[in-house]
Image (cartoon, rainbow, N blue to C red):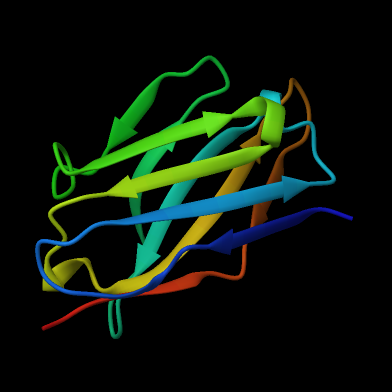
Length: 119
């Protein structure tokens, strides 16, 4: 079955860094658009950063210049390098895999990993 397993979350001080990982199994990782979302308490889930199957990236304005998304197809793993973290980055971070062929749609979510930015 399809699994997306996030890791790397934790507690970090403002200005610190974390790297999140999302290991995928059960899908042909290379053909999926991979995206990081986050959801803070009391707020809607929002897109953080995405990378297409051909390597094109996009970022939320709030993280541009601080976060970097990347993918390693050989390891079936998606990454999010987060630098200069702020308290407002505190959220549960989710990995998403999306593929829309000519017919049908395939969309999967991980279970999430908590990131807390606090002194």
